[in-house]
Length: 301
Length: 313
Image (cartoon, rainbow over all chains, first blue to last red; front, side, top):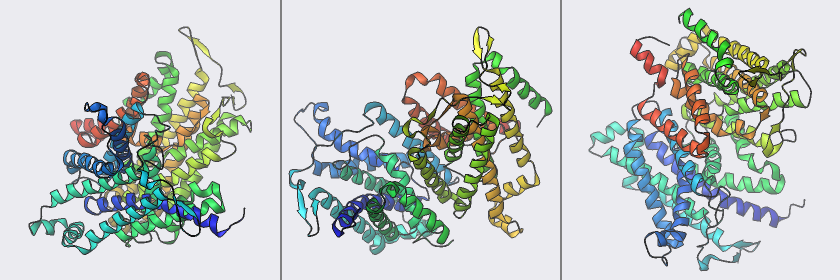
């Protein structure tokens, strides 16, 4: 196969498109891990939940509330789905996770694994595993734009741009604002922050809510590209775990950059040797473990 | 633990095929060994592997291939599967022990995913179908494992059952000996306080790796046994669902107890066969069990019982 500049670039751009999903999801995991010290196994399931909120809002919400003509449009879904899933997250944190902080952190992983099974299982029972199409993509995002070296679908370009805005916005808030400084201080030493009169439990709850809201946001963005299916999250989460191991969860910017880079590497692999594209991230993880066990952006402990 | 209990358990195992459905019993033995092997790592070394399906499923593919395509006898097939799992365990283990705690779980999960992809794509694994119709063959080339005897009017593969039972006892004995050896004491020390074990001069990495290899090998043996019992090696065996299931069995029965994994495996296998009519709701039920167990019941059945009796079971 000829490695023309164009084929490589188009696959790398499509890879970047996957990369922004890795970035948003691993960012959410990193934010949650920073303060709660748990790995949120339910992240993939909540990403899937976000996509379903968008899908069902468009197809079923109207008839359900007695207004058959009402459809939750795409733009509204981008706001509503994160809010709904964020609220679900807050409930999860308040009722379950908060009871586990005093025990081994592994219990948080196990609990969220159970939650992931429940959410995925419920949706598998009501929806088609092979997926349903989301047909509410706004008119304005149809078609393609000429990037000079290739024609790129407008929608995918939008996904890349808005995701970068959200990722770097989150980075800015955490690293550069007063609110973020509380958060970072809470990550370092929650007891001390409490002593300064900051409501740490509330901060933890909201952080978890925000982390999973990010996942839901990614879910809505993904809905028009991939079909919406109950297993979309579990396929994603394991790859994202590998991304997180490669980047290390200690750094916000690290998780964003790692996600983007690995997406592009995956796209590039598709051109060079397609069969390896589904495992390349895992193989990179192996290499990173051999060379720099703490992860690219991790701190040696 | 008291001798009487052990003798009673062995006697129960010997007469079981005459009382309960033998395939259920064999499935139980496979998963009980799998969970016990897993417990050696989580319960006695404090390492949570979320990729044990790679060893269980990987070995079941290898055994299936050796017996079906290469025409080896079943005991050699099981040996091959177990050795394969040990080797794989060495590779995965030496990578995974480079990280601790939560990262360890994620690394094992991700590495197991590579095995899953290989099982899906490799030319000899049968892709989505898996390896079907694996023959049970002749043990040592002499004893026909497929032969059935009529018990209460039902054909029962007694030879196979006793072969599986002997393998289970062997595997369980190895685990029991490991836990109660000086080596096992060091593992427990690592679980309780790793820095202290290091400061006492133990090469912690080496102990962890050793425990990982033993655990992987025995998980593999369980998988090999499973492929003979069901005559099938499938993608389910290597998937993360199976890794999750074995965590649940151990947690439910009691992490760090000798008998816990047996009780946990019994509970989960019973749940699965009793609730097979509810179809995919079983995933939800497994999930709910997980959540309830983590929130209310972290010691598991045997752990709670042990606390009541003030005894380590």
